[in-house]
Length: 340
Image (cartoon, rainbow, N blue to C red; front, side):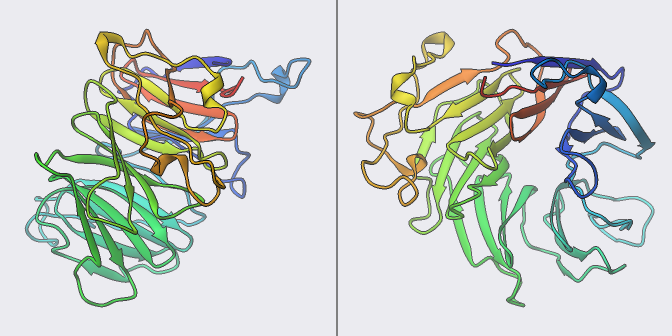
């Protein structure tokens, strides 16, 4: 599965990884924590005959950050919002709450936290544009934009909520929920081309696929990791491919592309069966493979990209042919030929 390089950071594990956008740096640059560090994953001086890069990740710059970094996004701005999340009183020196998720849609920035609060900031304004103080009675673990004016949040009681920021009422416009046990949801991503398709991952390692146009429960629940799923990402330009990482030390590539039936299926260890998803015979751009539910047709191929890993894979991101991930081995890894 391609050329993988690693860099030992000699720090605590990388809990957040994000590529910097092209307007800030070339796409082969990404950032990691506990100091905020910017790394280059490619060195033009080490290009091979075919243009591939062989150099290990190279530290460009870093800055000290107080506390654990839970999530990151990149934006051309220089602002600092103190005490955006807190349990009791914003003006006290103690009682701060973890900011667990952040998402940017220039110039807007949305944060969520373990205090159940949602903040809306703008990069060009010092104060919050809007705060929903009691958005959730439980911890909000992650947030993403659904559309320009709508966000998705997931919480610690298995709920997925849609918030329409055009409305002044501090209530979600829709609530979706896992059936049965309220398993905490840790991560969320939406399909880049079909915004009604949403993927979430939870404490039980399950991958849930939701169609927010219908029903209040997921359309598919797929057996996945043996422990908490920390991140889920659709490939931004090839969304038939999805990636998840887990506390159990695995990083999975889920391939729902139309030619998957021609490939050998990856069988999970421990007797767990390959996840099935069917492919509709009509236009794939209209009906996504992720929403199919007939197990008699094609099967999805699932591959563990790092089968020998034992410590937690805490974060991942993907851009073009490049996959970057951070682990509890105090190292960051770059796979530059993801589809090789």
